[in-house]
Amino acid sequence: MFDQTLGASQINTLYQAGAGIFYDVALAPQWAGGHLQFSWPGGGKLMQADRLDGPWTKVNSATSPYSVTATESQKFFRIQVQ
Image 1 (cartoon, rainbow, N blue to C red):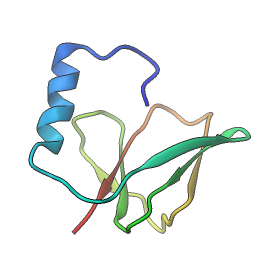
Image 2 (spheres, helix red, strand yellow):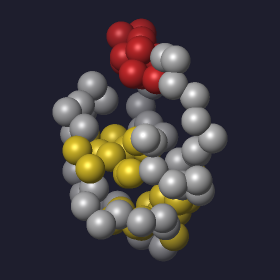
Image 3 (tube, rainbow, N blue to C red):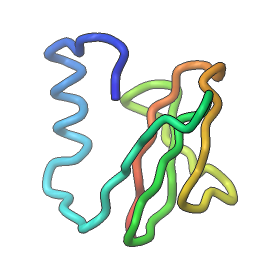
Image 4 (cartoon, helix red, strand yellow):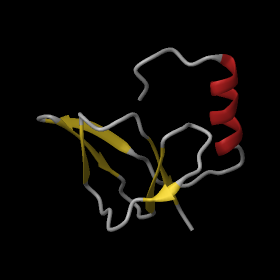
């Protein structure tokens, strides 16, 4: 989910980051009060970054569902599956 329109280079970065990777895991966000709650059935590690192109770090102790407060700075999230 993005709060702005992505430019061509940002879309290309997203595409390249996921090219050739297909897993039966979906990151499903939904609002719960003042929090954004992520759930990901099927396992995997929740990763976050301040920028779309990383660096990506594991969110320690994150289990599904995981809540993020709306007042935090911009973050990008994805699921790493091994």
